[in-house]
Length: 300
Image (cartoon, rainbow, N blue to C red; front, side, top):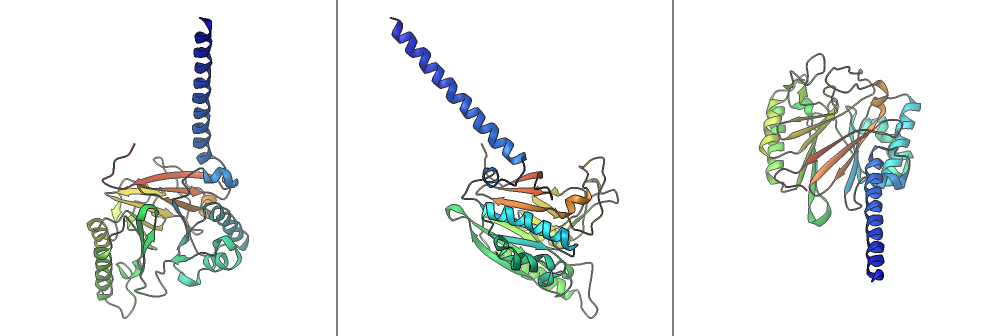
């Protein structure tokens, strides 16, 4: 009569051991997102191998030492995640030194670089459509020229350039049936008050914002608009990349953005139902994370 009792006790011990092991696995997985990103095995636990990864970074001129350090950090992440492409937020376009040196001298960064160009070539715009995700889902990446969409009007140009650009963007978004739609531009379409706080947010490019809203744009990547690296206005996520010339922000309502963060970059993970963005500082630490969910989906 004692054997069944012993058997039950042994079964209970096994079940408790499995539960404990499962708890440890989840704990380690959670800790890995907050840990240092120098370890490739640690990094890969952030997402699924089936997810698509890309980087976004603010281009521009940096001292050679800072530029080299930034590119080395980007290369580590690109290699660990098999990054598909890099988005370069720069007013210098194809002449941006970060893009040129990254693609030429760092093997893991020898992937497509898609750059903004707000000053050199007016009307520069293009779309990279149907970037394949898992299960037949797709991502469209649309680059716009914000210099032709309001505010600055070059000498000899008229507002017709703005109208043409909006017409192109409208036609482009009408035709797309992608699951994710990300637009990239140099200038932010949101601006904040002088203190940089979220109070007093103003839409700088209203015509552009209306097109985004009408056609279901999920996210807009640009240079840094406010204290926050991430702002949500309506249905659109605004993700700002810090640049070397930006001033530090100090805010009572937002985390302080320090000078060293201006030499960081974003790792973006695109899945079926969400896009997760990780801001990585010069020490290879994830100091900011945000998740954008696909609208109309239910989540567990």
